[in-house]
Length: 89
Image (cartoon, rainbow, N blue to C red; front, side, top):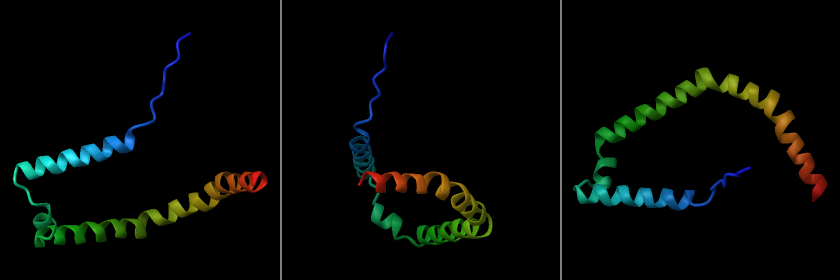
């Protein structure tokens, strides 16, 4: 019988190294992130994306998600966890 070792460490460090590598690569090719983010086109696109996502949440997703949250998650997941924690502490 062989058991597989599940590796759970190193995810945060890998993410930091990946972001650092991307930033170094962008700098090497001459991209200025500050000028890209502060450009009027990026600001306008970001505002559009933000309003789009908020609209989708408000008109389509908030009702079903809140129903599932209040009907299933709170009574069957959250409350039992909180009850067990209060009994232990």
